[in-house]
Image (cartoon, rainbow, N blue to C red):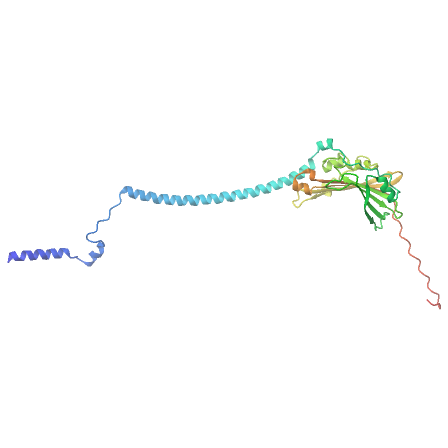
Length: 324
């Protein structure tokens, strides 16, 4: 009996050890009885994994940093370009104004040659228009004939006479003579205009042309009118004859009028002149030769305006009792 009980106890013990103790133990295991255990990472592999994570973070930060630096560099570059362009524009405008004022044109002054022959006009006073045109010569051609309605002048007709035999200037056209006629058709005013370069005055600055080279007085001398050297001077205030651009720095134009008294063949006369320098084209091209320099000179006989005709006398009123 003892021998028969021993195998049964052994079987029960084996079955009991094979069954799970509790349900919790089965859930806690999560692995089958026959699954291989998880291998544990070696210290070297753990270190390698940490290194990769650090490198990834560093690469991301580096990319962000490069983007920020690139943006800042682009912004700085564009701002510096805009500032440089603004400064260059201001410098160019200021430089143009300074060059216009300070250029002396020494070479032009020494080598300039008159390109046109100026006719003597002092003998035209008292001539008819036809006589004056014939006396002028140089291919004189009347291009304009205008009535003058100003009651404050004795001039009744104005003629423009182009000198077609003289070379035309590309910027100021042909040298021109101006004639003012009285009510009898006689010349009482003469005038002349041409470019400064055509007259042989070179590329002088405005102030030099007036104060140093006396181009106004010399132009009068060319047409036979005596205006003593030194009779013409610029105003002390440059703003009186200077026109500035919108930037308030660049000079677009210099223009000044002058006048005085003279005597021509025993006639008391008044002379007047206008010197004009236009820099608008030169400002755009940067070439001083593109400056339009032109001079106008006039001499008028001092004559009072013709009196207005007296009104016609009114007809006498009819006497009483007579029909109107």
